[in-house]
Image 1 (cartoon, rainbow, N blue to C red):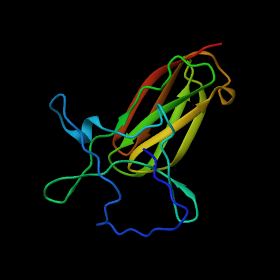
Image 2: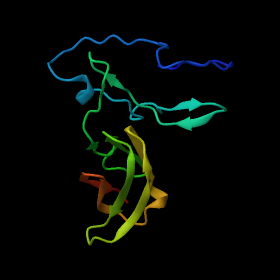
Image 3: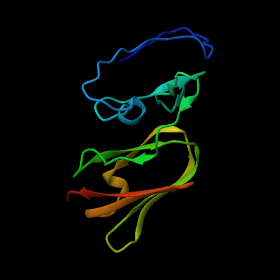
Amino acid sequence: MSWNTNRSIDLSDKDVLFTWVFTAQSSGSLSEVLRISSQRTIAESYQGRGELQNLSIRFIGTNSQEISGRSELYQNYPNPFDSRTVIGLNLAEQGRGTFKITDITGRTIKLIEKDWAKGYNEIWIDRRDIKATGVLYYSFEGGSFTASKKMVILE
């Protein structure tokens, strides 16, 4: 979905820009199964004078309280990869966290420490930035959430 305009539009929290209608094919909570990602096309939003912003879906319950969902580190896509891959990270709360890629010996290959946004975040990994091949591990630690996954870089 793409919406573009060449003029500035100010919206309040109560304004509706668009609405999506879904038909459930199985039972579950939308906040647990629905997310925005750049797996097929780049997911991005802009604010103010074109500043790139995080793009995520907020779920509001019938009591007008936000449903946080749970934090989750997703499997990189594609995996294995030879030029670049994307790793999704959903956080129930914003905060400081560390994303790390290590080789099988535990040596740190890449480290990103920053303040992460609540909701869906993406980490793009370019093969040229990773000086290793084969099986690597990636992990995230922040607040009370810790998770790790395995990925493969082809030669």
